[in-house]
Image 1 (tube, rainbow, N blue to C red):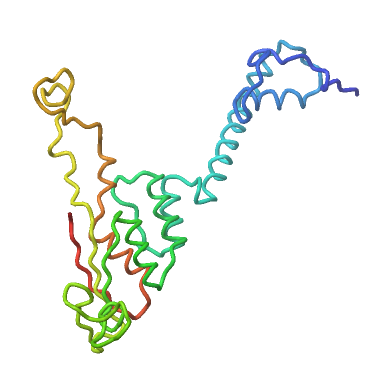
Image 2 (image 1 turned 90 degrees about the horizontal axis):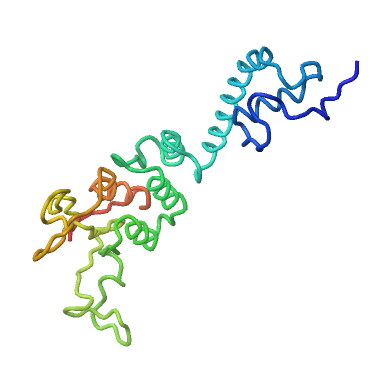
Length: 248
């Protein structure tokens, strides 16, 4: 029996001239038809009806394959799969998604924490800066560079009022005090809505204080818990960090 499937004319019905995108109904249909012997010609309504079941299954399988491939990498994962990746890296509730937080925002936070320098003073400073946009003030009572010293000649760390004037103490070994600064975030309370004179459309004689926004803005709020989690993920095990949060 001789097959001429390599010389088949364009199959009738679903596609005639345009190249179908991979995984589409047209693409799966054409792949099936080109594997058949040339018994049916170009007009085969009954065959097309039978093939639709295989086409539907093929499209579903391909779409699932594409989706699964995306979820295998942090850079492309979406939805609940990002949450599972965060649990794999940081443990259960180690770095949870904020309420209403988008995939892109959450992915950036995971990446920042995953590659973040840890167990160092510089790492703590950088982690809090990434989270809040402000550098914290870190004070270690038993660190001479933070406290200075009496009668230290030729040193920029000589104790003095208004410079290095904090008193150190050996009683606070393996402890530090961290002042964290974060935006107070006023939200949308002072913004006007549509059809309001103060929104800005055709408004005269008053400031235009409208703002496009929605629930996604909630994900920009840095909570106290976000700050504590960042510190716990960065500090040396067995140390104590006393934290003061300043909303400015």
